[in-house]
Length: 424
Ligand code: SF4
Ligand code: SF4
Image (cartoon, rainbow, N blue to C red; front, top):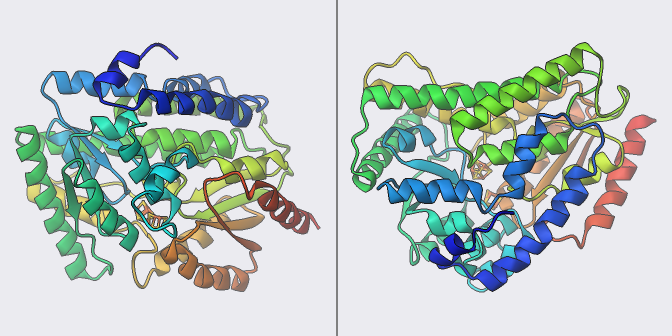
């Protein structure tokens, strides 16, 4: 990695502790990613982004701030990036996916909090992630209890604006989300000092829709036999989508897809055509959480689709681009975002319908429902997910895990048994 120490120092990071993270990340990425065979050349860009993860994009964000721009950190796929970019701000995902940050979070949070929340809080309090230090404001949401309380702790460090996400999907809830987006727009305008116009919002709706279309194109390539790209590679691309420049990211994904189309035409893939095909559903996998994908794919099966926030929930459904006034555009944003099916909603039949649809479209052999420990929402919803899949005669396995490597062997044994069962 190039030398970014001055920038990290200026950001007030704990350099000594951060060095420890810089030592382990390249090794982890090398073991999990660079060891794969026959990777598409188009992965070079994404490899570079990961290798410079705390350098290249943070430098761009700092440059933006030097010119008077503002950066907003987000933690959930319900927060509409379009509004932030339309006000001249930059949105960047902040969810923590490393065990490295968990102890820092445990200093202030109950141990039985999900690792994603603990890692996110720890990354900020320990001063070991530039993104958490750079953001001028965090945008939280009322999705789960752990997050709601974590915002109050983080608010002691950095201003947090919390969006009140309804927990049902009646017309009045969609209207309420529309009002929350209007409030966000005002908060963002006040913070950046720039007015959002129908022209800027319309433009950003197109930019983010283009990113969604590129990801949809990438995922669609995985419907092929053999699959032209690994699940691990697709996962890291989706993780990068949360913080990279949207236009550059879209171009790179489309370039990769051109290469994947050639592979498909040539019948070339990264797994044999008869490798078991797996759908993963459950809680999000924030970077650098690659544990389950690595476990499955190192056993010779292919992860072909993810019903996750770091999967199809991030890009399915486009925002209607025909609105010409801010009110029409915000209504279109509310409609699109409320189509996402997170377990924080009740009832949430859409998620099960999505899993069944994806299982069919991607011709999967089995589903792994994997939740982060202490996520009450997804663990509880798992009962209905398993029931529906059994009814549809789709093999399903439920797993609970955290960010540590301690249960890796146990996970491997269970996944291996599941894959053997699929091949019988
Ligand atoms: S799982 Fe739910 S709360 Fe978590 S990022 Fe996704 S939509 Fe947001
Ligand atoms: S995984 Fe579950 S508990 Fe953790 S932040 Fe997401 S919804 Fe909340």
